[in-house]
Image 1 (cartoon, rainbow, N blue to C red):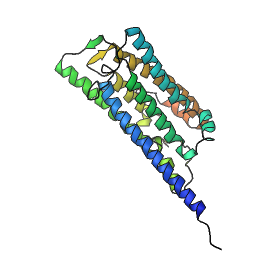
Image 2 (image 1 turned 30 degrees about the horizontal axis):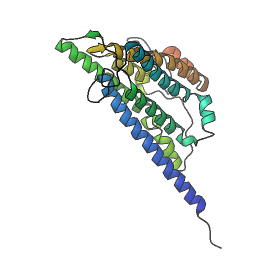
Image 3 (image 1 turned 90 degrees about the vertical axis):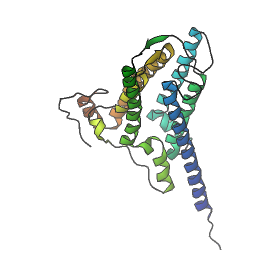
Image 4 (image 1 turned 45 degrees about the horizontal axis):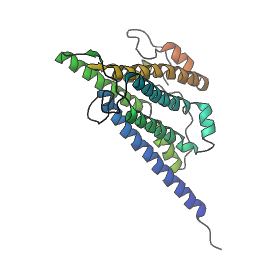
Amino acid sequence: MTTTTRPKAGVTYRATASALFAALAYLSFLAVFGYSVAFVAGTLVPRTVNGGGPHAGTATAVVIDVLLLTLFAVQHSVMARPAFKRVWTRLVPQHVERSCYVLAASAVLALTFWQWRPISGEVWHVHSTAARAVLWTLFGLGWVIVVAMTFAIDHFDLAGLRQVSRYVRGLRQAASEFRLPLPYRFVRHPMMTGFFIAFLATPVMTAGHLLFALLSCGYIVVAVRIEERDLTESLAEYRDYAAATPRYIPRLGRDRTAPRR
């Protein structure tokens, strides 16, 4: 009687399918993230925060843009909540849950960039060459901070690749633990600080760009508070850490008593 190899083949098929899906989600994320930098900068891509997209009256543009950013906020926050994850992982394997989240966020952002209605009118326009250089440097620094902080935490875990890698290698998924990389000893959310800088540092601030920046920064403030509530409930160390460490701006020259790891 020959021994069947179907279970092994089935595992191999699922592992391959999971790896391909995670790779697709990650490549989508890279493409959309790269586009988002150019979108906010207002250059290099056909549709930006300042122009190139469908035209509409000011009132209509505001309504559409607010709805687009609201859709992203709802997707981004709801899919990140533990209660949603518990239900969602009954439908999809746990090891691809994060990849689904990344792909969904990328899709909603792509829709936002595609359907964004520019709103004319300048809030400020900096003409000084030196000042413009400073603002563009800050803009670039903001995005560098964002990317660097993904690696400070765990870039491949955030992107869903590590979870699938562990599944492919037959390893258990790692449990959540409290870790404190160096930048997080100064502020609790340095990545969000980077976003604030990137969204607001520009030599030409149009009405549409300002709407995008204010709504995006406002969402970050709300989302961070929701995330911290979840972290406080799931990680015992987080409450003391939050009490000793500011959210976005470091307390220079003061002792930081947050736990180290």
